[in-house]
Amino acid sequence: GTARERVLATRSYLLAPPATSCCHSLARPCRGCLRVSRCSVCSVAAMKVAVLQLGPVHGQPERNMRRADELLAPYSKDDNISVLVLPELAFTGYLFRDQPAALGLAEDARSGPTLRWCARVARDLACTISCGFMRQEACEPGQARASPSSSVKLFNSVMVVSPQGELVTVYDKSFLYSSDKTWAEEGTGFMTVKIPQRGSEQMLHCGLGICMDINPYGFQAPFTAYELATFNKARKTKLLLFSSAWCNSRLEDPESMRTPPVPVDTVRYWIERLSPLLGQDTFFIAADRIGQEAFALLREGAEGLCTFCGGSCVIGLKDLKLFGMLDHTREAVLAVDLPIA
Image: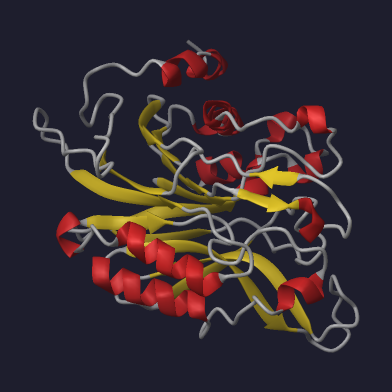
């Protein structure tokens, strides 16, 4: 059917995966290590990708890095992971009421603790890492910024680190969510990056996105503009690396709307937003966070909790195939083999 018809069928597709598991069908990970075995019945080369679904404790980056190390401990270079994706603001927490509240957790992309963590893990696993973090940059004189009294600008960013532990690039979130606007500056636009594939001389063209980037700009642009998907379709990206802290409610929502997350609905919505890429040989690799944070972090005296949705997943958009998905109840690593031509 049409791309729209395939999207509408996604809910039942996700809820009822077939029993078979190979590169060309819906892969079902084992319950132990969540690794998907390489297909033994086809000759298509496989590329292993992984997502780390984390539930960071707000304001405790060192603790959260140690937890990430624990989750990754079963993995080594021998697992042949080519790329590992972590969530948005992976180690800091997500809600900040203003720039001063966030500033103590911001860092220089070239020398901060997130780069040091990524460089170490990238070398240990011999893989490329894409990881969300809070970036700090000095302001030029007279430059506009979110907090006029500050001498720095903050960005909601991802860093891409090479298997050698070197910083490849930094991408700043282009479309800010309401809770980003209290402290962060808007990025200058979408971008792509080339990363190596393990065991191959091939460099893969990858798009980068952070959470709100997949939505219409400011929730005011036409829904069918599909900005992130259209950008990546034009550049024929092979992988779309997506870091997220997707929440299921806003501060202004009534208590009746603050219901438990349903990850399959989140993933179905992401696929709808990627409609222009359906039929293109692109893989969507999404690392979302889980857990809760108090809305009081965003506004003094506010009540209630912001709950994050999980649903970290790997999806082939050419034939709309789900290679693996996590729920919202636990931290875990999802590692799958993709058929890369």
